[in-house]
Image (tube, rainbow, N blue to C red; front, top):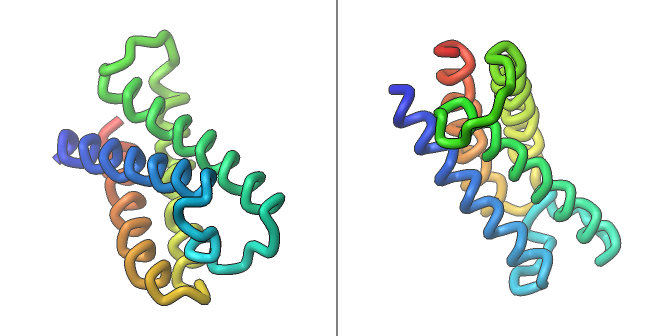
Length: 126
């Protein structure tokens, strides 16, 4: 179960990183994300760069937790980070449910629920 949660998180977060980079370079319109609420390129750049940084941090946490990346970080900090990720993904699920974009509302709601479940599994196992 732990390996599935790690793999699921790494795959989904990596896909999100790719998606955010694609949005950042404007290959996909930014009205498909952030609940369709972004009003300008400036907002989009700020939100997308923030997302890329946060998702990169999350990937790093999973890599450390799974011993794929050997860094001397106390296990307690990794556990707290996994709980924080669980909470953020649950909170994000609420945002996805209220999105103005139906694709985001359906697809990303399911995806963030999965991310929350995978993070919870790892938080409980740590």
